[in-house]
Length: 152
Picture 1 (cartoon, rainbow, N blue to C red):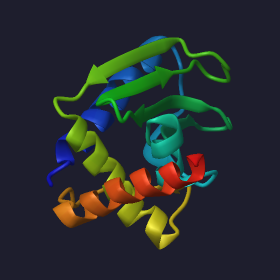
Picture 2: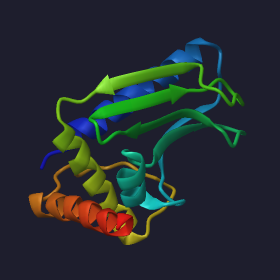
Picture 3: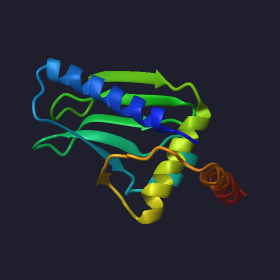
Picture 4: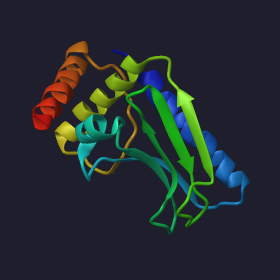
């Protein structure tokens, strides 16, 4: 499954919000994509919160997000932009993907390429966007079975 459009739409959306923050006078924004899956991992956030873990851009010299985003299991990318050292977002954008299946495939890619390889809270670039259908099916099955068992 080709999920490159999800990644590209995510980065484009985050860059657009970063541009808006710069226009608002914010300086020192670092546009290196971070994926913050160290607290609970992609599978937990997908099953329990209906979304991936957070993606983010930071400000130099701040421990707070400049831009924060995630891909929802509902096929919506949510992006927030924060002024330097602000706790509440100044900008909020929601971008509809054309496919919920692509969102799940993207989550499966993150799980396969990062979580399963113990790569947590990393800055990265995904250069390969093709996820085999069996990986997506296994991710879907794991999310369905693992979390259904815990509810019983």
